[in-house]
Image 1: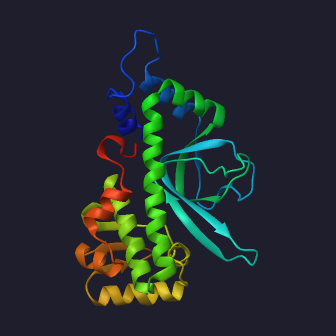
Image 2 (image 1 turned 90 degrees about the vertical axis):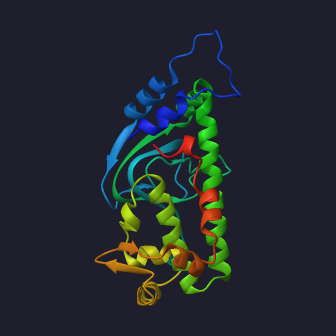
Length: 254
């Protein structure tokens, strides 16, 4: 599962010309670090509570994680999903605590790398920092688009955008076969992502299905029939959105 990441790191960097000073092979170093810190977690496992001590970077190898924040009354907003290949450090600006709760949605394999070890990797594998920065930029772009719709969008716009974003991300890592999405989500969880109740999600999905934009089967098995119409419903330009939220090919998820 780490193949694409290692392939990307084999490419020479224009910012870091080859030196005569010996350095460990970056692909071997990274691979060994990912393997030595790899752990598996079942659905429902809470890896980190909001406000917990935080001192690690999470490298997703497989599965889904949800990042969320909660109100005192229990209401929750899912901030983002981590998918295979994503890199994320949940530590807040105080450099001490996690800004979000991290929950496993489907069986996940994650390399949880301590901060000191990660800093050493960035020093010895310079292209890894560029890769991490691209993921931070793409996450910010996704958050900006969602925030706009949470604040100003209709229910249809929110659901359409959420599904379109997930499609583009899954398609980039080869997990959206012929526009078919198998999401390990309940309607409530999709609602927590889109800022809607499960009832609103259900009604909106039915309207989109009635217009033959998509069909939904079982628990979140979705087939998108008309991507352009879904983009119109989400009020986005498909090509522009893809360019802003999907890292360039040489830094695609592992």
